[in-house]
Structure formats: structure tokens, C-alpha cells
Image (cartoon, rainbow, N blue to C red):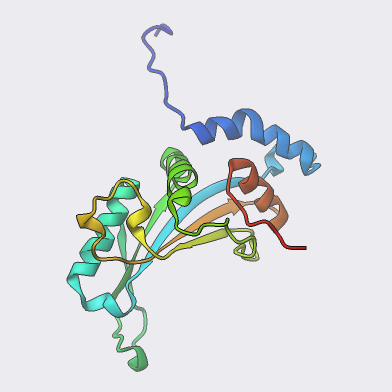
Length: 192
């Protein structure tokens, strides 16, 4: 097969930036001896908890439609594993939706999140640097899905929250923060 007839593989902007530039910069800045020790993004997980609205079909349908439109994938249901009387919850009830993004879709979603969605948030002063867990993964909570441009006004009349978890393969929280800062995540300025 000649090179003229081969199809050009599309690579998302952030993936290309990471592979060609950021990987080497991070290796030098973090003083790592091996390029394979450089932190990288493994996957992005999106969660919608239905909470008190778990019995409302309209909210469930709106949340499912939101996840499908902003990611291009069908979400799966999260099911209650135990019955808890205080929360009026029965084992087997649908309590939320989740979705995992990997590869090109993951980088595309992250690019849209950083450059379109976060700037549209009202009173946005940056993301908290304290949202890292012990493994170095980063969580972002959005209280309203209407900031996504893929959704029409009619689709945002039933509001619900959304959690975005960026799962990273890194040695420490500091390495994770260095990678996310390089990718353009706007962290809050720390008061000294």
C-alpha cells in the first residue's frame, strides 16, 4: 500500500500536544529518569447521581440525554447494592448514570471542558487544587449541565449536577497537578 492511499489518522489537539511537547517538558521539570514515568491521563469518568429525583422519569431521561449528547456515548445505569430505609432506597433501584471515556474521545471531551465549558461558568475563579484524591486523580463537580454548548435550551430545563473524574497514572499528587496545569486546567491562585 502506498502512502498516498493510506488514510490519515485524526489525533485530538491535546493528545498531539501531550505526545510531542508536554511529555518531554514534564520529564525534565519533574526530574524523571524514564519517559514512561511521566504522568498521563488514563480515562475520564462522568457521573450523574439522581438523588431525590431517582423516581422521576423526566430527570432520568434528561440526565441520560445530557451524557449522550456531550460525550457521544451511551451511559450505563448505576444500581443500588443495598436497601437503606432512611433514604427510601431499595436494592436494585436505579440511582444514577455513569460513563467512561478513553482514547480520542477522552482528549476531545477534556479539550471542550477546558476551553468552552469552564469559561462559561458563572463566577468562575479557577478550580480547587484540593480536589485530588490520594491516588492523584482529580474531580470536578458541576452543579448545572446548561454550560455545555451541545445542549439546547429545552434540554436544560430539568437541571441536574455532573461529576467529572480525571483518572491519572502518576506517582504523586504534585505530578498530577503538574500535568493538568500543562494541559491548561485553570487552578485557583493560592492566597499566601
